[in-house]
Amino acid sequence: MVRSHRTRNYGRHADPHGLPKNAVAIIGAEFPVTHRQTTMKISARNVLQGTIVSIVRGPVTTEVTLEIAAGVQIVSTITSNSAESLGLVEGGKAYGVIKASSVMVATD
Image 1 (cartoon, one colour):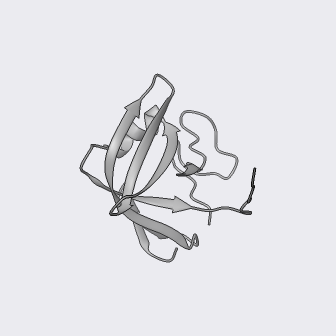
Image 2 (cartoon, one colour):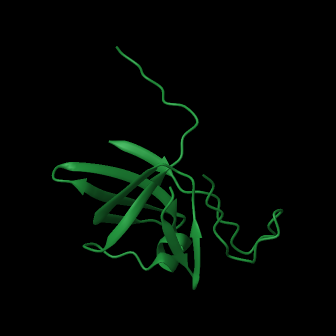
């Protein structure tokens, strides 16, 4: 399973980049993303469309599992506030956006 972490969500805190409150800073695919009636492009190349197959909600974080191909799943942990504001539901469509500066490989 691939685990990725969501980009920074400033929530109720001040944003050092001047973004509005509750804005999600997506750093890094050249496809339009619509968020609160704003369309933007992102530079991340690893954009994987999938179906939400599992949502495990916790008090602080929520684990979301996307099936991106038959039998292929990725898992992401995001804040529970973000999961709620995105309106995530099992069976719904979502994108996994992965921006990594390195990939580590290990063996036993």
